[in-house]
Length: 102
Image (cartoon, rainbow, N blue to C red; front, side, top):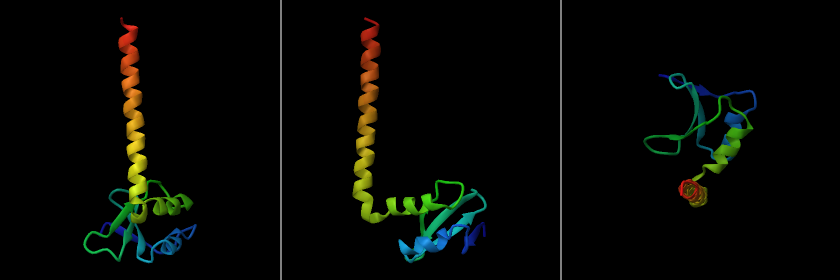
């Protein structure tokens, strides 16, 4: 197996994640060299998320809360707003370039 179960860590993140969801367990994936949070309450693929940081710290707790299913609508709304702003910014840049060349 290419994953190591993390039961104890410096900042007790593996245990603190259980306050968010009792099913959360942390593994270190030796192949990808990333931490993964799995939810043992899920059937089939238990991967909840890959920790986007190189170490387990309080950011992992914040990220776990951010990624919760209960927040899915809000997260999607934020992503859509961000993408809309990027599209508007790109359109404005193109317009400014075209006007500069006239």
